[in-house]
Image: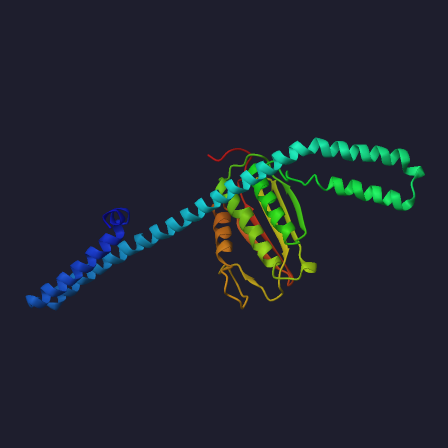
Length: 288
């Protein structure tokens, strides 16, 4: 209990304020002190209590934000470890698969005239099947964003969501890693969640991102239910099903964009939505 109060001094101060208010009221009642003095004392203590309460809530919100940042960093570490592991495995297999595909292509070229149409198509399909084993793990030069894209591409694939990735981001940016994770992971998580609420035949997900004229642009387009509408100002959806929180990620995205003097733009197109995040004064290099 003592350790808890040491870490949360504001709570202890609030308790002291409430005790003092009780003492002032009791003292005034006992000594028949003028109501005006009692009122002034209580009012002063309440003002101090409000100030302490304000700082207490600020501390609580800071702790919540810090926990979110730590959670995102842990996610990034997980993404990076998975990405590194799979890439190492694929590097080991890459040369063998390339040799197999190359050998099959040579055989196809040498025997194409002698093969029937059916045999030709079967050979082509086998080459395609072997080539698909070379699953893409490098989407852009930036390792933080690349790990997120890889992780989300696997998730999208498992959920039968076509995922179009057009990202050209340099290896180093003067943006904190946690903010990069916040923007890319939140945008893609929201998009994948919305896709899961529509029929598989209607699902689509596209991310376009680039650094242009010191402005980082991240645009995510995805399918969604027609009755799911997003209110940018409140950061919430107007969907009648409120069993799951939908607005928190949008608020974080808006705050992150504003941190870099940017903004967030939402375009609701009925069965599709595009969310764009703009971050200004972004340069190639490490954050200071």
